[in-house]
Length: 244
Image (tube, rainbow, N blue to C red; front, side, top):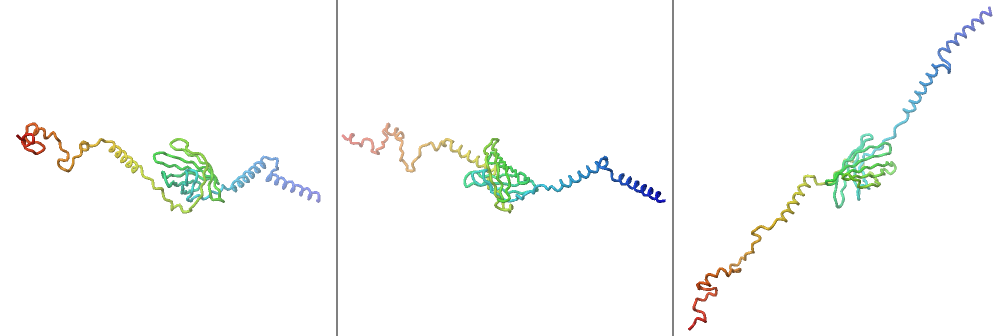
């Protein structure tokens, strides 16, 4: 009887072991390799999702930019996520003022901007590629400028924000193309008028307002030759030489 009990317990243990091996295969079985791969993929995806993108700094300010011109250029930037856009102007004490449109983007601390302006009749474009310094609240980097299809300037630039309220930005007063054309036409007309010859009446000798001031002696020729008086108002025959 005792032997039968031992055999029964062995059988139950064997069946239990088979069930365990079926549900949880060994490391050498293909099913376990597939499970391990799934676990690794899940762990990688979880780790990747925890890697956040670099924070995008807020650059929506009015900036003072040096390096583009001999004096400061004022730039107002608006921001939509990583996209940047806005306006810029140059108002020198003397010389030609201009307005520009600005486009660009920011990625991490890297800033890329392009200013495009019409300076008189010349189209000029300035590319600003720099690094944003959160401590100094500034952007510094390289400048590349093209005017009328040619490279006009290469160097460094620096932008420092001066006002967080971009609504206070106003454009530089620049004459419109129509006004410039009208001014040019007026200047040309003035030059043409100056080049025209004087009118015919202007070429005549000026006449005196005093009657007889300019006396043409040819008008007295008939009187002198016919003896009908003379310009001395002395009657003929009354001269000293005619007395007998």
